Length: 441
Image (tube, rainbow, N blue to C red):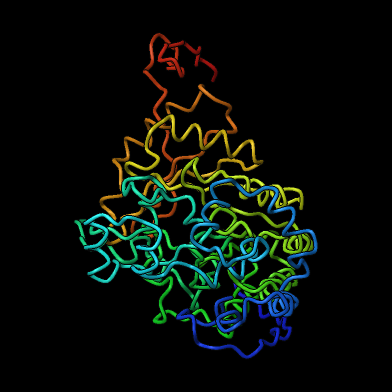
């Protein structure tokens, strides 16, 4: 690795307003800002002015309401009748009203015995958090519904199987300073928050997200920023966590500005699921702010075609219109998206929403994940079922993130059928074998 050169790039962190401790979240997240705020329109307006220039009532709520799905509208009317349309479409309201305990789940779902068992035993490895918007997509009667299985605790989370680990990718080992992972030569992973608006039950970083035992205080960002500034080999910074888009807009902009001031940082990427589980966060104001920091890329975590709602389409449209290249990251999950037809429907839907399918991940062997993991062969079968049968742009790269810190290793169905008389025998997407004269010296 190249010798580090000291570079000083500093700006004052935006000052925060006083907050209450109503929401039990780690410091440095939007929950700290909104926990005690009234839901009155005047209070919401004052709060919005702190974080985002795009206020409900200035056209945003109207546009979002026009794109809201009938299912979302019906769910609000049934379970949150006191919420106005503008409040439902305000991402801060969604964060304040997340479903975070058994009582909240029982209010909207008919819990199965296994789900009740998991909740009685503490809810598994992760805290529970589901935005009202995403809860509207869950089937209240079917515990085997794809989206419901990804966010509601199950007993399988409490079972540790052979080969599983709390940190299977050895990210902590490759961390030169807290919150930064430097595994590949020219890029770093910057973990800027431990909070997600919705916690996926198969999360690779279940050891740290939503936990007060892992501190993501922005005061510690300085060490990470100093490391990046002093390491000229780093040209690419990926912001992740947790989910960076759960942070207040001012704080996110401060961080982007600091990174943009480092000469050798060429691109910044944001890894997020917020456009899928909290699309109300992607306001016109957020899009305007983000476009000031190009080249900026975004990797969005999609799981299933049921997530492709009118609200999500609008969020993706705003980001794409802001000039942000969008890619998808999907985790292959047993019984959820491990059928070719399901994956093809998802990939086609992403393309229609200007999101380029990027990675299909084999599920990482975190503790309590065996009920989510498929055989690796299943991923290869899905790629085989996509390649040649749909647009090349709609075929993601299937990867295994190698345990022990080996990094992402791409896997492809082997198209080589053999060699014969100087010819390379190649199998096409239909299973037919063709000869290529591989005789060039």
